[in-house]
Length: 217
Image 1 (spheres, rainbow, N blue to C red):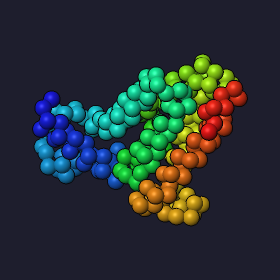
Image 2 (image 1 turned 60 degrees about the vertical axis):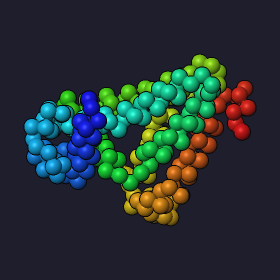
Image 3 (image 1 turned 180 degrees about the vertical axis):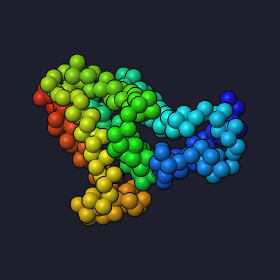
């Protein structure tokens, strides 16, 4: 695909992400999205096929980039398991602890009880990333760097759940933390460093095996 087509496709996805986050999947229409993107319906259908295809393309674009990063970390033989986790926590906080349309869209859809092929596809995209993280955790256990009885699924839930609570309940967490978690400057200067420090200390204390005290510094 040439650069002009890639740029046009990305433009449509940017607009669609914003419209879906404002109106939800059910409330948004491809006609509205094509109008705001300044493209005709034929072009939108050519690239994405349907509203469901467009919706999934938004998720796939965002999540796939993180999966590639995770895979690169997992395959880096110069890093031990904790260094891989440490690197991922930094990247995860930088990428997802943000006040943007995609995080709002993700929360809206995952909070619904919607069933069917669309939700199954979204869950599949998200679970692929969770499984890449699980590989890093399993490596640490197999090599004796992490506690052999560490609950990998709960580690993943802790990492993702902390972000979800803070970002998706901003009124509560702003009152709890004492600053506006929707303010971009506050996010960069206060929230991200605090989340990184907390998650690293929490998971380090839980994961590291007693015989690997050298990682605890």
